[in-house]
Image (cartoon, rainbow, N blue to C red; front, side):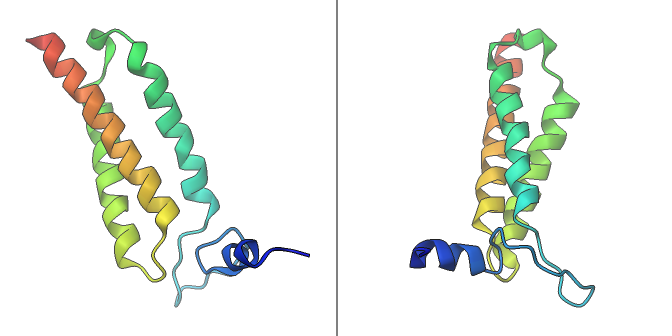
Length: 106
């Protein structure tokens, strides 16, 4: 038998259960933010990259995307905590990368 916590997670409107998305009821599917974690992993893997190879436009675009989607995840109903966490982490890793580039430039 499935535990009640897993069942609640599975049936949550922002959970992994496949949902039908209509134009009148927009939703952020569970799997899109889950796969967005790959961007964070790639950004963390580049922490060892020399600072002169860091791209300002790329990191700025990713960081802004993270901030925008983190905000959006808190205004939609139901709140999508998976999207919030991945977007916040993306903004944080981009901020760190940009700070590395700025420190190198000085």
